[in-house]
Amino acid sequence: MEVKNNNKPRALILRTAGTNCAYETQYALEKAGADVDLVHVNQLVKEKGLLGPYHIFVLPGGFTYGDDIAAGKVLANQIRHHILDELKRFIDDGKLIIGICNGFQVLMKMGLLPGVNGKEAYLTGNKQRYTLTYNDSNKFEDRWVYLKSSSNKSVFVDDDSLIYVPIAHAEGKFVAGNREDIDKLDKSRQIVFKYVDKDGNIANYPWNPNGSSSNIAGVCDSTGRVLGMMPHPERHIDPTQHPRWTREGLKSEGDGIAIFRNAINYIRRTFST
Image (cartoon, one colour):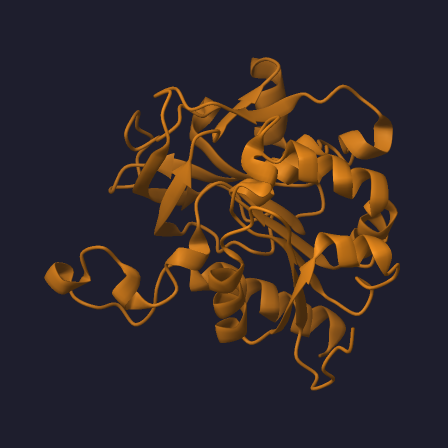
């Protein structure tokens, strides 16, 4: 594949059967200043080294392979068995990975997230201590939620921010093996986003739409350069995407754009694009 050479940060959005948020994510990244290519997983598997010229690897939302085994599990195995070494080099080179909704599920099921103290499950062969499972409501949740940043460890996230974005999932409940595992994540500052109410306070359903432990909505890896989150920032890029903009007035931009802009700014600082 020919990659444009115009000194813009380059993002690759992975597509496969069931991906349905690729174009919204492309729009968000392009608006933030990236060149974006949509690439099918089969092409990435076939053309070794294809990922090399890119700076950001994106696993968008959707229902890959119909979630037939478990949400994200089939794609997670495909990536793990075919391009894991490339992803490891990608991370070691200081580049960025983001998984949104189904993409977050993929990163969790393959063991890339969350990892604690630099010990990602895919590197150590350790038993996976964290997963995403069925919502407590036992139904698909489609609503807007408030997220508060609880750490500035991730390069994608502004410190002490409160954003409003939609969720759409049936298996978004973040759980761990035990309370100690959650405490380890908290201590290592890898809990990036928590579900909160409109005033920024920890609250139960429907503010926490799935029953996630400690209201966890997003986590990063030990480097802060791999982010997974269940809500969809790419669905609140323009201010008119806010569900109540006609009553509450227009902001200058949607809340989700900051996540993509932070990624682009990091790449520009790090790689001088």
